[in-house]
Each structure stands twice: as C-alpha cells, then as structure tokens.
Image (cartoon, rainbow, N blue to C red):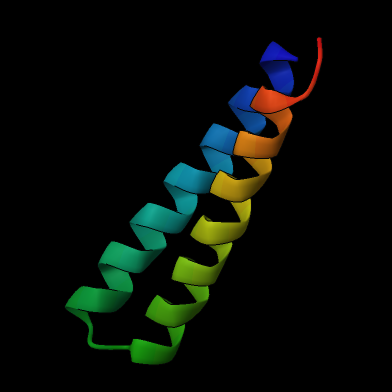
Amino acid sequence: MFLKNKILGFITGGALVVGAIAFNLEMISLFIISLIILFITTSTAYLVSTEEP
C-alpha cells in the first residue's frame, strides 16, 4: 500500500516537473500532456486511498 502511494507520488512529481519545464519553454502540448498525467495519477491515488484496506 505504502509502496504504491510512493510510486504514484513519484509519477505525480515527475509530471509536475515536466509541466513546469514545458510551461517555461512554452511547449503547450507537452504541458497539456503533463496535466493529463497529473489528473490520472491524482485520481488513481484518490481511488486507492479510499478503497478498503
């Protein structure tokens, strides 16, 4: 359970970093892709955290 959250956190952090770089370089398509990844990982983390232990 903890390891799964750590992996999701790592992916989320990576998406944030990529999004920040893309935003600075004005690469809008890459920025949108990172936002989509961010949304998927956060929703997955929410579903994982709400399921029964």
